[in-house]
Structures are given as C-alpha cells and as structure tokens.
Image 1 (cartoon, rainbow, N blue to C red):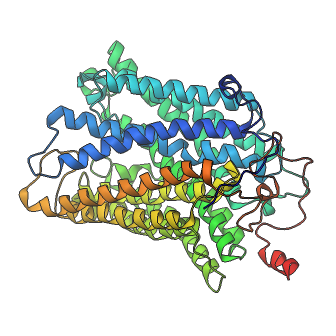
Image 2 (image 1 turned 30 degrees about the vertical axis):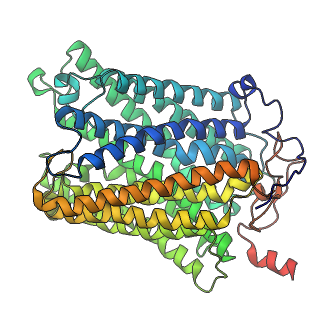
Image 3 (image 1 turned 180 degrees about the vertical axis):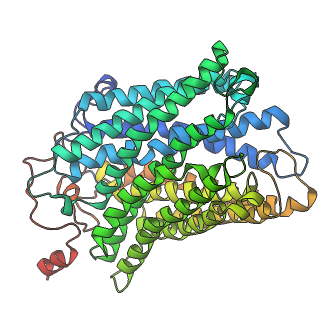
Length: 538
C-alpha cells in the first residue's frame, strides 16, 4: 500500500500536539486515546502473566511456578485484565471517543470530569502495579475473605486501594455518559433513533453508577477488617464470610455486563453496516440492553450455590439466571435475522463480529450449566468455569473491542490498515482462542481444579493443546498491533466514511476536528437507514 502525502485539516491530533496539551486536554477524543494507551499497558501485563501461567501448566508438576508464586501470577492476571482492561476498554476508549459524535454533540456533558476520570484510573492502576512489583497479591481477583482480610501476608491492602480508586473512574464515566445522552442529543435524534451502540452504553452506565459503589464499599470493609481488626467477614471476630460474597457478586456479576454490553453495541453497528440492512427488531435489541442491565442485578447468588446459602434461595437465583439469558438470546437471534438475505461483506470488523456471535453463544450456553444447581456443584472451581468465563470475556468482550477498534480506526486516525492482514489476524484469533479454551471445558468436566499449579498426568495432553492455542492467540493479538501502528505512517487516507455506514460520526471528517462538527447536525432519519442510502446512490 503506498504512502499518501495528503495534507490534513486541523483535527484533534494535529492541534497543539505537545505533551501538556494532551495531559490537560478536555477533548473527549483525546481522552479516549489516553485511555487506549493506558489500558494497553494493563492488557500487556495481563497477557504476559497469562502466558507465564500457560507455560507453567505445560507439565503436570508445574514447569515455572509453584505455590504462592503461582497464586500471585493468576491474581495479577485476573486483576489487571478485569478491573483495568475489560471494564474500561470499550466505554472508556470507544465510548469516550464516539458517543458525542454519534449523538451530534461537541463533547461530553462534563469535559473536566472526563479528564479527572482518566487521572483517577491512572492513579488506581499505578497503585495496583506498585503492589504487584513489591510482593504481589495472592487472593485472586475476587479477594475472598477471610483469607484476604486476615490471613494473606501479601499486598492485599494496596491492591484493594488501587481497585477502590479506579471504581470512581467508572462512576464518573457512567455519570458523564448518562447526562450526555439525556441532554446533548442533536435535534431530531429521538430515543427511537439512537444508535444501538449508544443504547448499550446507556445500559452500561446505569450498572456503573448503581453497582460500582457496592464493590468499593466492600473492598473498604476488607481494608477495615485487615487494618483495624473490625469483625466484618472473619468468623473468629464475629463476622460472616458469606456476607462478602453477597456484596462482591452483587457488583461483579453485573460487572460482566459492563464488559459485554458495549461489545454487543459494537456488534450491532458492524452487523448493520456490513449487511447493508437495518437491525432486525431494533426496538427489541435496544430494550434487551436495558433488560440485561436490570435483571443482571438479581442473579448474583448463582455464584454461591456451594457457599451454604439456602437451597430455596439457590433455586430462585437459578431461575433468574435462566431469565437473564433471554435478552441475550434476543440479540443473537436479531443479529442472525439481520444477516439473513443481507448484502454481507466480510471485512475485518465483520469477521470479529461473527466471531463474537459464535464465541459468546458458546459462553452463554455453557453458563446455563453453571446456573443449574445440580451441575454447578460438580463444575464449581474447575476449569469448566475458567473456559466459560473466558468465552464470555475474551471471546465476547475482547473480540467486540477488537471489532470496534477496527471498525472505527479510520475515523479515529484518518488512515486505513491493510485489509488482508486484518482478516488474517481475525481468523487467527478465532482459531487460537478455541484451541486455548475449548479443551478446558473437557478438563473441568473431568475434574481439573482451577487455581492449582499441578494436575494429574492424564490431563497433560489437553493442557498442552491449551498452551499451544495460547501461543497462536498471542500472535493473533500481536499482528494487529503491528499493522495498526504501521497504518499511522503508511496507510491510505480513509476519508470521512470508508465503510459507507450510517450514523452521525461518519459525517464528520476523519479524524474529527475539535468540536466535531462545523454546525450541529439535524437528524431526519431512523438509525441504520441503509435502504434509503442505497436508493439515493441508485
């Protein structure tokens, strides 16, 4: 692909490019880029720790890590990936960059608060990394008490403080998004015309605001018990360890939807664009996002079937867990119906979207085994849970993030990436992911426990397959880093709308100028009016 020496108009990248202008910026687009750089650091930390874990599990006796060293490594992997990559990835990066553009606004409602949320995120992340490099933490990402609050001799407090601080970043981001969506929509952009990406972030913001304070208070309680000996969770001090699980999972199960709902919004945009059709059942897809957000707050107890909670409570949580699968199923059905008889183009974003549908469906269906009391007792704390979780989080959330990054990369940077390499990377990720995690379903069903550095020799073949798949997966993640950075110097100019997509963001230049639009647009059509667009072209 040849280099185009095209002079660009003033945009958010070229106006005052100094470091301080970035660190003091109130432009939502620049703040999205700052988040992208920040979460990439934590993705690297999580990916390297995952690679070390998989290499150690290459042999039954543990090739690299033993005992507490293994515990610290899987704790670092979980904490960095969940709290510092998966939760902020799409909302903080793509949401920050795109929401004002999608609704025809010049910025978010509270630009200073937006910048503050990034500084809070960096502060919380720095605390966690300091804890990891000065001894680490061995509690896992769940911080289960009373081990975390009393008995662990690792850096639990500093790690919990990092996660506690970062929670305020999520709260401020959610608040900003809600006010922006309510108060700053362009004329004519009614609720029934909102892009589904915006609906997904609206639902996600509700979870951020309502759920994040709960986990923040819970971690504060852990610190109080650990530092002051107040009996909250330790039975020896008159506390109740099950109380911690109720509080933690009340947030942490809805947090799954903080990670997955934005990816669903990405998939809706990509499917509509590359099928050249309006999303089938737009109203149901939008409503299902809100339904997932609401019902998600009532299913936390399915994580506690073996904790000693009431069997009757377990039955209720089991039924509610099946109920929350319905709106997710609605989305998958409607995406599939949109593809039917569509003019489908298999560009890289579309390959990621199709991969999302397949992997998320497997993750969702295997979740039903864990939502059923009888099978969950057998599968709890096995690699079946690890596989299910990663099919949702990596197969779903990260695949959706990759699809969204590829879809809007031309808008963010103004340059195109090489199509052949991007398609190859998407296929490589799909193959590597399934080779990594599908064997873990079999391992877990046969009884291999998670969070152990040794295992019976008969499980080695499947573990070797999983480690080999992780190697392919690593290459699949490395290739996009190379060609996306390459595109910044050698890519072809994208133009304002390289995909021929609908949506207000595609009417702005690429990259968008400060303030996004010369004048605020007026919306006169429904979302995804591809039939109207094709008629005009004809």
